[in-house]
Length: 64
Image (cartoon, rainbow, N blue to C red; front, side, top):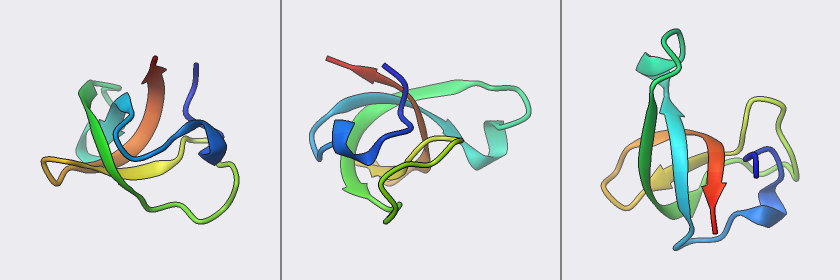
């Protein structure tokens, strides 16, 4: 599942995000969502979230 829809993401969800610094390489970082930072219901590049370890990036993959 991709991370373009806000309704699919809740705090505590396990996700892969791409950090701002890794956007060119596409390197993914796995973590657990702490806060959802995007206010709109969807975003073409992925919903922006803050992980429990403080890293911020856009969701690329949601793990069920």
